[in-house]
Amino acid sequence: MKIDADLKSFLDEKVAAYNTFDFIENDPVCIPHRYHLKEDIEIAGFLAATISWGNRKTIVKNATHMLDLLGESPFDFVMSHDEHQLHLLDHFVHRTFNSIDYKCFIQSLKHIYTEHGGLEAIFSKYAEPHSLQFAIHQFKQLFFEKSTSERSKKHVSDPMAGSSAKRLNMYLRWMVRNDKNGVDLGIWTSLHTSQLSCPLDIHTGNVARKLGLLDRVQNDARAVTALDESLREMDPVDPVKYDFALFGLGIFEGF
Image 1: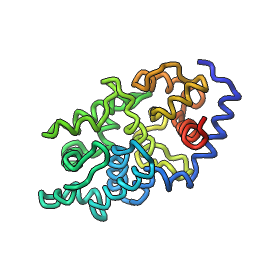
Image 2: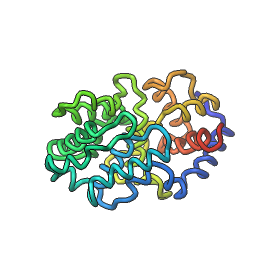
Image 3: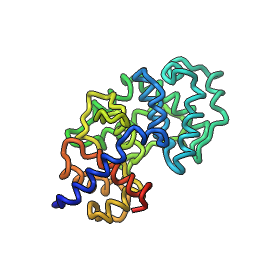
Image 4: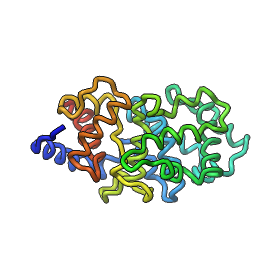
């Protein structure tokens, strides 16, 4: 797809408008920004991203409560929790994500750090040169390989099963991008922004279609690939910066 220069200029302006420190406060990305230790940041980000669907204020409120239940260090809780401490999570709920799922995720995270070297190590190991979608698929397999909670698997999407994996692609943006603007945390140095995919949801999808960046009607894995191609034409090094433009146009400007 040949991208019009005026369209690129327009979207670059919108990236500059929304990719600012002011964006953080009312977005789920504010949750990992509470922490300083790498493992605390990546765990907090993963948990916040997992429940990032619905009203943004509610997401931030529930994600704040979610992490408060783990004390000062999510990583310490994950690695040293016992059955008694897991009961602290008994009444947590965000839409269809409940305490059963939360306990499963804590146990699965411990497995990831104990057996697989941590979150970054998995995505790094299975990353492809220009995509992390297969890595997401592999991550899901490893995350639940010791889990007994079948119901919890629905809370981690799989691009190989056709999902757009919006929340995981958003999480990966948080962890990998480091453009000095302060929104994304950029703590995973083994991966590159060129490997990221745009977090595709109803808002970014609708805006992308109106702008001629996406033809596919469904917001699925194939649509993510198609949108990636358009965004990479505008910026092959950091294509996902345009998530700020598409999201901002849809949420804040009703484009």
